[in-house]
Image 1 (cartoon, rainbow, N blue to C red):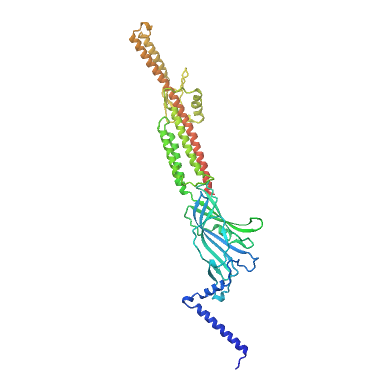
Image 2: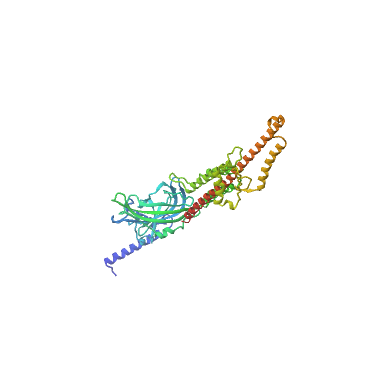
Length: 492
């Protein structure tokens, strides 16, 4: 049977195609040097005539859409002094390269391949807040699918500038921004979008290491188009990383020691003011608090534009300790017994010993006793108690007996003949009379000095109670205010 020339040519072409197919299949299944011959052919096919410096679109009017995503892995450092945040993130971006497209049937159903990053076009998307190059590992490859989708996934150590507000330290919440944008290309060339929905991005904490000082609250995203000169418009995607400090370490090591020292200062008011122990005790507390501030000074964050509230708290506590010591010194000086103290003024007696106990309810706990003589002597016969009050210990007959003993001494001297004219008194008796008179004046002067000292002691005790209550109210109000503020900040 004789075949026509057309049929002969068709059979020849079929035999040649089958032969080539068998050869490709044989090379793909071979071992050794040509084990990945399909990938080699695909790589050569994709790189043939490829220009990595040209934006990969066939129509130059088409904008390249770059989808990006961000996952925070760890918060490495928060430098409040230099206003720098160091984070470790997983950054992902993808775009479509119209020149990296192939038919999987021609390459043994290979649908994706990894190519060197240096051999393909990569968008120039940077982070605007970059201040330093972090120690990021180099990922030299990108994944390319058969439809031209390029995926560039890499971890980055991001060292960025951030405005850190430390006023609420250690209950502060920081919000730092990472702004991704093309440094050169306008929105007509490169546009940016999210790889995931904003809700998924906000709540994703799957890879975050949650055992450090900082806790990741959420990640917010914001897309914006801006223009520098009202001519060219650029696209940017801003991620707001919201983190919160865990305050337990600072509460135990900063706040509790300060609170304990302040409580001991309040307890020190129960020491008697007329003893020198209270002054020594409060001086010791002041020195201890000074050493405490020196130790914690390196722990507190410092900036050039502000001071945290906890630093103000420590300064106010130091001021309260100084005020407490000053009050103690004044009270001790007031109640200190001296022979040359002036009498208590009448207005001080009226305000401190009469009105103040009634207004501040001191009389409910302590009884004040005031015995006024006809010559104006005040506040006699007190017995010291624990807090600025005195109890009556002498009966009215004691004063009568004292007056009668005074008249008896004068009458006895007259009865013994010691009061006649000095001209008839023997020299020896005259000397004895002078000595007895001097002793009597000394005893009376000593009694008057003791009465004045007792009056000042009583005034000092009452003032000590009043100042202690004022100091206690100030400390409690200050503590409640700070506690409320810190509680609100911690919950917010």
